[in-house]
Length: 362
Image (tube, rainbow, N blue to C red; front, side, top):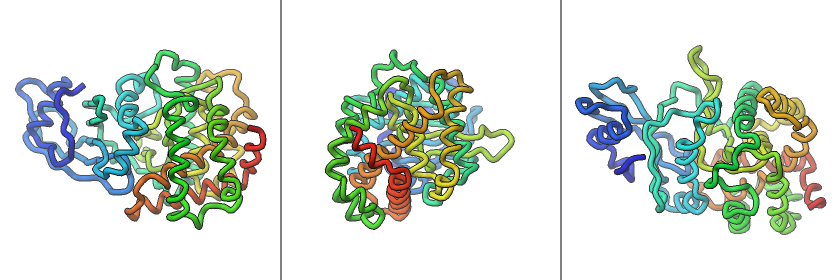
């Protein structure tokens, strides 16, 4: 891990990059980065982080470009990220867990995290892949690719995370408490900015829902548990379109948890998939996920188990929607657009699947 990270994109220069890559073993003593150009990436895609593409000139065998990821320069968003330990969890995922699965994520060239959550990732540039678009929403073909990779990720960690002490559980953890508090605090802003997309059925039962968030967390945290990505949405998916590409690269591991894998499935389907695609193909897509788990060696998890967990996950995804829409700063056009779609799609899915009836069982 790096000794001396930069703290802002403005601090990135050839001298620092040379020292960082040399410390991590990517440059020899006689090799260096001669020049670097910092190209900030699109605002509104990574609300929780500052990201830039680095164009390198070097006398070494390095890629022409790398990507750097640092804490958000928006104080409100950084505060939320620190509260939920997002920077710590992403750094630890790449250091401790990424090599334990064949699910594809970017190669890491350097990393840093400290107790103050000063954070840095220097990673492979995968911008030649096609970035998913949460505003447009996932097509059927894109959803199938995402579900296949998700099943591969979950199967790798199925029942096998007892050795990972830093990874919190979905329930009965600081993360769980923060989600509960975040939903309570974020409700007013969610209504202020996105109220037109909040169904009346959810408004009518909001106080009851809020009181049963812990029960939903418990339902999504019983055995069998696996690694949950935590933010498995289109803006974190990079689709391979070239023959040399992997079908999908998953990025943004800031929210991993221990819990039932369907938490990611419900989040993807109710936040990112086009509503008509979900409505027309929902059953077959959930079955595809369960079949993918079984192909990865998982036993004892039926299609019906997946469906029941999925409905619970769609309902719990409303908690995540309120925390995002209600506590982050939505004041850029791209961020506001995808948050609007997230709230709208999730509300429709909850009503389509009669998810609020689950509250009566808790």
